[in-house]
Structures are given as structure tokens and as C-alpha cells.
Length: 164
Image (cartoon, rainbow, N blue to C red; front, side, top):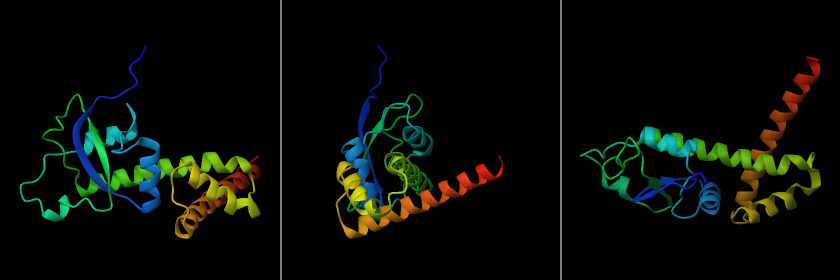
């Protein structure tokens, strides 16, 4: 049997995410967030983590509104010392998590086709199934993300039909 679980250290970093993303990632991966073994997120962490700068500010230490992310043990990086995620690494992690979120939303909802009038109910149901608070703001954000993805998909479909 293959080992599919990753051994996690006691080290945790905190990442600022939009509310809906924070709720989703905690629902999907627990709290503190523990990404799966061999995931892109963990590869990104291994690449980006560094030793905390000596001139770090207290602002970096605040955890209000941030999601705790558990650091796994890496073969080539000791997280007892390399447990600081610089701003570039934070941005990369935020983009990575948002991309995974969009893929999940799209995979679950696009199979309904042109959801039109059912869009509100379907998005609220998806939010409930994925631990996202049912607020108008969250719904509007997800509806916009879904609509942009659907528009891009339709444009791509049109191009493919035209090129045949």
C-alpha cells in the first residue's frame, strides 16, 4: 500500500485569503490547512519558504483574518528554520488556491449547462456543500467567477467549431 499521507510538522504559517476562499480551503483541507502529499501547493511552499528575516516586523506576525497552513516535513528543507513565506510566495499561494477553487466550482457547475434561472439556487447549494457562508457578497463573487469562466468556455467552443 502506497503512503498517501504527508507527515506534518508543528510549524504553521498564516495566509490572507478572501473570505469565500478561506472558508472553502478550510472546508476542503481542514484547519490548519494540510494540503495533500505531492500537491502543487506543497511544492510551492517548499520552493518559497525561507528563513525569517531578522528585521521582520510585528505586522507580519498578526494572524487576524488569515488561514493557518500546516507545513509538512520536506526532504530538502527544514521547516523549523525555513518557516517564513515572503510576499512573492504568499501571492503565488493565493493564486494557486484561487485557481484550484475555480476549477472545483467549474467542474461541479458546468455540467448543468446553461443554468440560467437556476443559477442562484445552484450556486447557493454549491456554497453550502463546500463550507462557504451563504451571503449575498459571496454569492455575487461566485456568480461572477462562474460567468467569466462560462464566457471563456463558450468563446473557446465557438473558436473550435469555426476551425473545423
